[in-house]
Length: 488
Ligand code: NAD
Image (cartoon, rainbow, N blue to C red):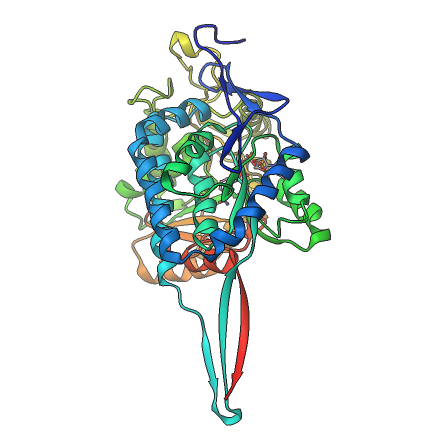
């Protein structure tokens, strides 16, 4: 169904500093109403070719600018996005289904900060030097931008994750062709409108909209794109790895998770419960870092469960533009069905659904009856082998299970193919360090969640990814290093 009250928003690709229409388009839905409200270019080889050409042409000038010149431009862009923060937040909420509060306080401020952070960080790198006096030599390393970077991002944190790639890529002197998710393209398009004013030269940032299969794959297969930074699912990453193999591309892969929270019986539950609710249900559970397996030590298991479920029931689901709402709409009808199907499978296996899907009723405002909503759902008594404990669900569903010992819980927490983010709750400092060291996880938060210092590495182990991004890590990924030896 189409929203008749408003005109459709039609996006265009941004190539060589100009908006260019596409020959065909895909529909984009407002997840909170189920209406088509936007048309996104269905780009393919031809559009990607034009964008790569523009990025290649812009590379010599952009890469020869000083870090300070690039830094000033990134800061200007950050200011411009921040100036329009409310418009960006409204657009992100409408396009993605996330609450306006989350978009205002997390997505857009972080997109702004991504540019500010790398604008500053690029000024502080030094390269290595090593003296070999016995043979009269000095070695040093030199770093240079790689060329045209291909950047592919998912739908859950659209502008946030796209700028987490664009900012370091261009700060290092690369030019880029970015492909946001076809389901959430609007804020990337809005950002393109600010590039000229920020002083980003034409061709430095090109954005090609479209599907993964067409536009994404054309970018991955393009011989003049030596580097791909991808955030998305493990399945897509496998395909990207295969497709890029003939070109031996440099890949950074930030993938899915099946993140455990481990709650020991000495945990401060007054901190642990509200934070674990957030880590389970924030952004509808659509964050790669969301908790979906909560291991609670036997002695506090029933108390934890009682309090956790009582609090989960208080999370308000509804119109994302209502600032009092905690849970917005899921990204798509298909995704909602998939998330629901996991709850059904758990029930069929004999698990207990304590609140949410299939248990409580969801009352939605009249305008949102066709939106893709779901209540925060807590499942208990799930077996570790169950698909609900093994596969990434990526929705507002979390499983709570009991454990007895430290050794046991570490084995169980590590017993999945993923290894992205874990949280540990305990007031015993020794235990916290011990457990953190043994968890197979790129990030371990203890007694907190989602607190990030962008200086430090971000990324996953096992099926959660390859490579790390962060100040130094992104610098290394987005530059090519050379070792030079001088004999005197
Ligand atoms: P997805 O893999 O379906 O899509 C991600 C992007 O890749 C989209 O832009 C898509 O169009 C593109 N794509 C799809 N097929 C492609 C192909 N064959 N070639 C090139 N590009 C292709 O993922 P999604 O559903 O958009 O996002 C959710 C997933 O992302 C979850 O698994 C989540 O955990 C993961 N994620 C990871 C992180 C992280 O930092 N580790 C952050 C956010 C999301």
